[in-house]
Amino acid sequence: MSFIEFKNICKKYAGNDKNSVTDFNLDIEEKEFIAFVGPSGCGKSTTLRMIAGFEEITSGDLFIDGKRVNEVAPADRGISMVFQNYALYPHMTVADNIMFPLINRKVPKAEARERAQEMAKLVQLDHLMDRKPKALSGGQQQRVAIARALVKKPEVLLLDEPLSNLDAKLRVETREEIRRIQQEVGITTIFVTHDQEEAMSISDRIAVMEKGVVQQFEVPQKMYLNPGNLFVAQFLGTPQINIFDVTVKGGKIMCGDVILREGCKAADGNYKAGVRPEAFNVSENGILVKATHVRMTGRELQLRVALAKEELRVLVHSDMQVSVGTEFCVTIRDNQILLFDQTGKTVGKY
Ligand code: ADP
Image (cartoon, rainbow, N blue to C red; front, side, top):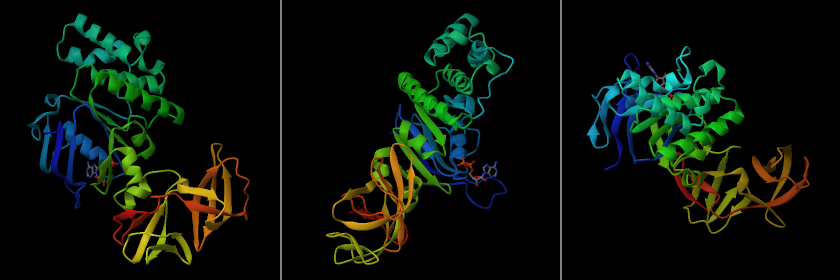
């Protein structure tokens, strides 16, 4: 038995002719950090709100710690949720904001203050207890919201796009902070984001969703290297994976007349190939390509190269001497050519 179990959960909003979430099945273990990730409108928030009890489950069963909670009131689910906009009380100090859920539950004030202090320490804001929210940075406000969510000692922490209002640098810092806090407290956490890099970088496992359906649930590195279908392959990674048509004939993977690989075990036929921009090695011999765009990003050069009729994204070391028109050879590293069948399902990697 897993700590949180979704069994065939569907959600259909009144007035909507389509399901917003369809046949959602997922098992989450205690203390795991999970991200629901996918494009806007794919059903991430709806799923999170069903766990919190803010949305009714249309069909299916949700279990938390072995107990079916479909009809359990939000306050009785042992769950805390943190929102994108922090939702702090502006007229209250940091201390009062963090204490609020305890005061609300009639916990004696001295005890509430002590527990709030503990939480403030955990999120490293104990020196700012007397400030009002508007005197804090966005990242600090979000940490107050997290402290307030944790002060009740919930069993599950839900985070709905908690970093969206922060600028790029603060987003990275705050996500690391969230991961540290989660590990220190050891709390089962579900994090919703549309940002695949954010999801991969801090989660134990991620669920990639599209159109209300979980496409894959896996450890980030495994999913990145073994996407189950074309959607997942394209959703993960920047710059995006190259997708192009290939033919397999007698073990050769061909892009037009160019042989990309020999000794491939896939059956003869037409496929979509997926090759990540970082999967190419520049080499003495191999596949001849020609640079059509060169962009310096610092850590690497982002190239576009012509290969047969395709134009592919290729990342190379920033010290390579290359300009538009330069011809050079590349090889594709082992197991870095993904093949997808005509329905988009992964056939294998070669
Ligand atoms: P995400 O969080 O991935 O952006 P949502 O869960 O917010 O996606 O939305 C999933 C789908 O459900 C979308 O098509 C959205 O339009 C629809 N939806 C969300 N909330 C409601 C609602 N209250 N009433 C009707 N449809 C909704």
